[in-house]
Length: 384
Image (cartoon, rainbow, N blue to C red; front, side, top):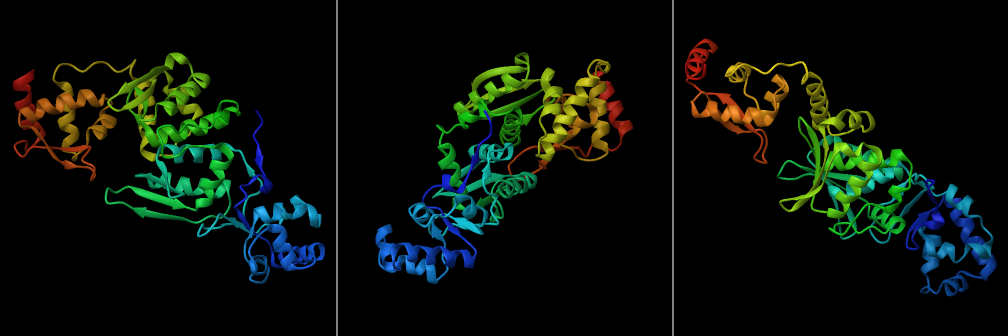
């Protein structure tokens, strides 16, 4: 399927447009010539007395439905109108899109934007919201808006949790809903069916958005988890289409969510095809790939040696389990087990959390461990 273009005449009827003042004036002059007067033009449109006069005299946005009901009578050209639109907006208080990109092109970026709105976004009273803890993803959301629609305002706020949320014009929701008929903010919502027939790069951007928003990258897999089973099923179809099926763990329920995973054998392929935005997930994926390369050459540590390596790493500073894993190339689950044993011996302790969400824990050496030599004697005496 070839990507489509959405022209101004494809927009919802309640969209309002602003033309340059001279073209705006000429439009109403031609209407008066054809219909005889502004009042007669208002009767043609079936609007209240003075409505069209206000559009004309106050240089207001003109409703698209009015232009659609007029253009054939005054013999204007749609392409001419579209080329000269300065801005457009939805009804009432909707913020305008200035210097609009017209026609709107069905692009990988547009599908990526829609996916973000479905995963970490929502619609509240017609206003799109996008929430994430990563400033890079918030900035990316704004860039996608401008790349797809034009100059458009977005407002960014910080929540008490430390997350950011971004709001933008209602017209974005109106247009996307009109073009794709998507149910946002619902567990019944799903990706546009067009994604399965559009070119490959469209799917890559959708996968990227879902992993950036809902993905967890571990040393041996990427897992995407959502309560929306429909979207998880759609994601698995896309992954199976462009990646080796043997890489995938089938869709399964876990707690209240559904998940699909890319196994370790598919991480390199994923990295080559998908360019993530979330900085932490980029680092985690790079680490996972590097670790997989070392797996065949790194020998297993002698009994007790790993714990000594952990203590040595903590001597340089307090660290989370992930930071320790990245430093010494050992799975986080194994490090957790070692730290619990070290804690039971009084050698390490938990010292708060990295962020306000209550995880991950920060691990530090206990006061009784004054130097590495003493720790080694104590530890060796217990385990070696």
